[in-house]
Image (tube, rainbow, N blue to C red; front, side):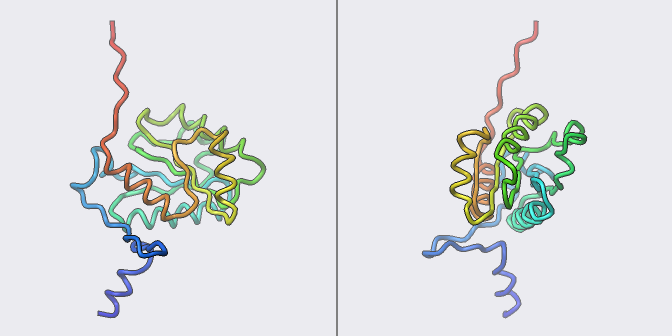
Length: 177
């Protein structure tokens, strides 16, 4: 019993202060079309090994919650590699940052580049995990152009779970003549 109590804790049962409910594991029937695929969620470390570590933690949490995420290093989104980034099955891409570094311009430029290669129904999420996250996210919201922002792994997981449960609205195809 003790080991099952320990396994029930950890990342998959993050609880908010104040007694709010834990994050619940998704079952295959809970997922909107496309979200059951491996790589429907792609977690990418923004620039540094710490960014990658945070992306890996989020990926692990999402896996425990019933998704099949991919985790990639910042090299995958570097200028030399972003054109070959395979995100055809992605429904959501989360860029993970422990610090924004030189400027929010990096994030804005990266979001712009990603929009050129990702599926039209794919969501961009920026996770900024630093202690000053709320202030930096306010600045990012004004300039970066992402679809969503999170300052904690729990908040990011909630955003992703809500998106995975919601049917995606597809952009109608242009009529061909």
